[in-house]
Image (tube, rainbow over all chains, first blue to last red; front, side, top):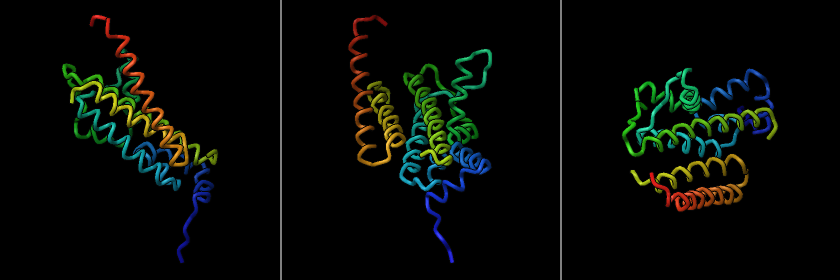
Length: 136
Length: 57
């Protein structure tokens, strides 16, 4: 006999440290996966679609995926924000995309989309963590 | 697409959508928060655009 686990049961199960780490990792790799895991289907799907779309629109606008350059603090911070996008960032790196075209009119807008997609995903990860901790 | 206005509308849409869904739990509240945020983004962009109009590039 199969039993359906409720959102409350999943929240209790996720409160264990190991599961919380897995939850945050999943939420990082696939935007919205943490919410889907915790049974917040509507939120999870919106985050998955919106954040992934934002990241790829950023690439289409000739935005740049910044490298880690410690000598350039702002570039390093932008690189951290890019990494926070998770799966889309990994896919872009694998496809060697995100070189950025500085002369393109939409270069800065593209950067803005790429960076904000990562930062929003970080907020989404924190929200999933809070749900996992039973705070929400 | 090189229109900066369209780009800011697109950007505002996505950011408002994520914040609306993130901050509220009920769909009606999410829609209201998202719509207010979207309007705020676009209105601020228009006002700042007008304020910067006299400045040379």
